[in-house]
Length: 236
Image (cartoon, rainbow, N blue to C red; front, side, top):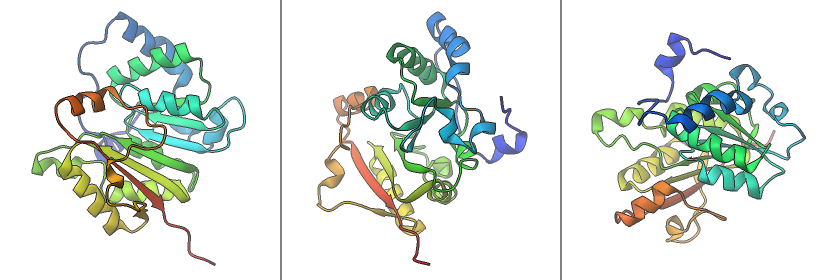
């Protein structure tokens, strides 16, 4: 098991608490009993396809999967693909592990630390896509530098996602949506794939929704769905 160095902790992309409400018995059991089975160790990140028991047609990453609703639905729908889910928040990880055991899926591996650490170790161009759904918006101006969408993390995504692959983003925070559109435009490695004026209102294909999104809609907030494509490599 890889233990983060002080340098890794200081320069990563994750900020905030690891635990919210105290873990209950079932959650504690899930972390202790199941996480070692499904956990991706950083030392194995250089050969991510070898993490799965059989060949996979491609790899997909979900950063901050929350309770895991979308990640599970995506993996069930695409049993030919290998999925890596990142969630440092242990309450969400525990919920995911309980549901993952019940599903008996073998095409999901989980990482419970900072997504930046994992992205730095994955092979270049190994991912078919990456998802970032409802990330912490860090609404106070002095905390904006903590938002995941920023130049260094876009560099990491651009390196890990193959040309033509996808980076998908969803949020109910208007300011963060505008921030993301501007940051991706200025970065240059991805382009927004929208073809119609209201594409941002349309959920992603096969979108199952999440508990967080349902609460946001109930509270009157409007979800936004953005899909960006990794730019093709220039011709030799």
